[in-house]
Length: 475
Image (cartoon, rainbow, N blue to C red; front, side, top):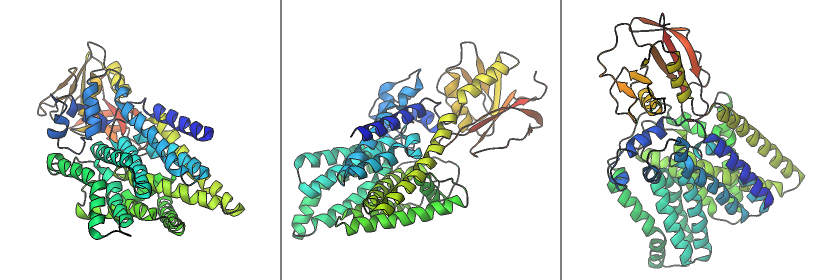
């Protein structure tokens, strides 16, 4: 228990460290949506974008405007760390070594560290999926009204955290139906199934009527389904996303998943049905039912977590089969932990971007009191500029030339998009999602020459690089 507590503590410190950097676009967009509401109920009724993660939105609404923006990430921090504890508890049922293995994999998972330290709904959804899994297993094994209520609560909170909770929930429906079938009449099976699942299904129906049907999907950089799923495999194992490594990641994940499912089935447990549904069946069916335009690895975080739990069960089983199994446990764990550790170290160094530093640099290096800025994107960059301009010292004036955008704060002035200065803006901001961009030394925008001034980097799954160009001859 002390070992597990120490692992969880280290995982919590990494998540806290990851929460200290700048907010990035999606977090800022959530705030922009929420701070314009007049009542808490509007988080469910007035916002119909996929950026509205209901529970997180309600949390942001109750907090209101905070000068220390890292406070907005506290819900994710708490639930992200609690998810590690739940994973340990789930693993403990199969023995202390399984619990330690699952705790290590969850605590030091790079994607879980990232999404447990930003103000979105992914970490709460993961936590409630694990609570619902724990409760559902208790219900199916031993019964108990208290666990039914726990399952209902976790499922409702899971759905209002993020709709990706459906990856677990739909697989849980399949598992429940399978487990309840033996020894019961069809009517008795249906009644018991309804007792367990009716409340979560009703919640899903209400959410569908209120928000899911009219939901508007925001855009983003196009990745593609095949590459996205390959990235999820690489993230799960801490393997680089580039060829040929990414192909090896896919192969390794497939092999480990198949071996894990077979090991569960050989052990006499029917939980392989839940894992197969969460990892394979439900994601496939959801993508067929509604093929996404833009899809991101973060949409598959719950399948990723269940893959890590399945791998934890498999590796612990290997370790109990003699010297060769123990060596395999050590080898795989070292490879996964080192890979995730390298990714995490880079993320903690660069964070999700350094937007406040970039804006401060432009203000300090500008010739006059007014800072004129243009950029290569009419939505992403002005939203970020608008948010961080509120934290500038009094007297600093930033004017953004481009498409109109309603900002948070009042220290940024937005042109109407048609009055681009004849001699250009003093600054031009270029953003890049490339891991290591190589910016050109000069840039021409509408006939005006700019020179590279400074780059502000990022690393990981959220954010982007900011590359700042200064107009030639400005000072």
